[in-house]
Image (cartoon, rainbow over all chains, first blue to last red; front, side, top):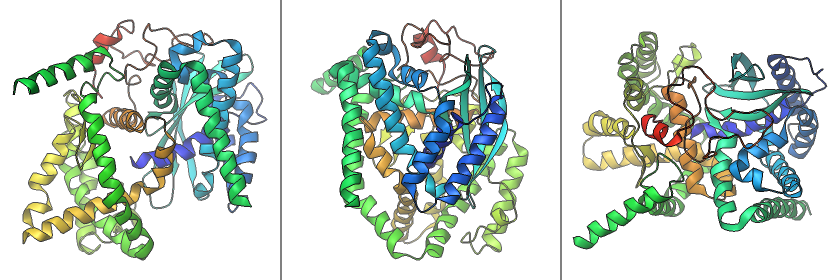
Length: 207
Length: 268
C-alpha cells in the first residue's frame, strides 16, 4: 500500500515523460531523463504553488503522452463500441482527471531523485518499458516504469506503473463496471462530473 | 445448516458467473468484509492515526515506525535466505544487529544511515518464489487485503513474533494496537486517492494483487498479471499497436488466447 503514494509521482512524471521539446528521434531513456530533470526543477522552483506546478508540468509532458491510447486501454473492450465523439470526450475527461489528481500532488516530491535503471523490450520493436527508481530521503526507492510506444510522432508514453501497479489496469476494472451499469455516456458523465466538482471546490476554497 | 450450504453454493455460482477478477472468486464474501473494515477504520483506526500524527512529535513517530520495521527486518532474513538470496539475508542480519543495539532496540535506523540496504522480502514472497500459487484474494477482517498464500506471512508473524513473548496479555494488545496505528498512519496520505475511486473495493484489490505479483518477481514480472478485467477476446482495444496487454516477454508460458486457463495457472 505504501507504494500508492508514488502514484502521484509516477503519474506526474509519466505524464511528464510524455512531453518535452525532445526531437522525435529521442530514445525513451533519454526522454525520461530529460523530462524528469525538468519536472523536478519545476517542482523545486514552485514548491509552494501546487497549481502552478500542475500547469507547468502538464505543459511539459503533454506532447510526450499518448492520451488516446492511454484512455483506450483504460476503457478496455468498450472503447471499440464508443462513437468517435464519445472517444474524444473520454480522452478529454480522463486526461483532465489525471492532471487534476496526480500533477497537483507533486510538490511533496521536491527532494526526489529519479534514476533510470534501464529498459526492457516489449512484444515488438515499437514498444519499450523504461524502468526507473524514485528516491526520497530516508525512504526505500520506489520502482517507477514507463511504457513507451513508437508512433509516427516519436516515442510516446501510454502507461505508467508504480511499484508494479499499472495505471491503466487499475482504471480498467472500475471503468468497466461503470460502463456495464450506465453505458459509455455514463462513464463520460461520471468523469466530467467529478472533474467539475473538483473545479468547483477549488474555486470555492480560494474565495 | 442446509441453508448455509445453499448460500455458499449460490455464492460460488455467483462468483463463477461474473468474475470481475480472476483471483477473486470470493468477492461476494470479501465485499461485505471490506465494508466492515471500512467501518472499523472510520470509527477507530483512522481517527487514532490522525491524532497520532498531529499530536506526537515527528521524531517519536519515526522512532515507533523504526521499531516495528526492525522486527519486519528480522523476519525478512529467513524469508530472503529461503529464496537463496543470501546477500539480502546478510544485509538484513546486519541491519537488525545494528539497529537493535546501536539503534536502541530499533528506535533509530542506524543501518540506513550506513547505507545497508533494506530488503523487501516476506514469507508470502518466499512461497511465491518456489512456485506456490497465491490462491484466492481475501479481505481479512481487521487485517485488510491478503491472498491465501500471503496470509502465511501474518500467521508466522503472530505465531513467532514478539506478541508471543509479551506479558501480561494487555501488553500484547498495546503492541498490536500501536503497530496497526503506525501502519495506518503511513497510509493516511492515500485516503484522498481512495476516496476518488468509483469502486474502492476493486481499486484496493487490483492494486494489492498487482503489487504482490511484482514483488514475487522482484520487480521484473514476465508479463502483466492476467486479472481478467482486460479485453476478454484477447484483442487490443486500441488498434495502434496490436498485442500490448498480453505479456511483454518471451518467458510467457501460456497461450494468450486462453485467458481463463492462464488465470488458473498463474497466480500473483
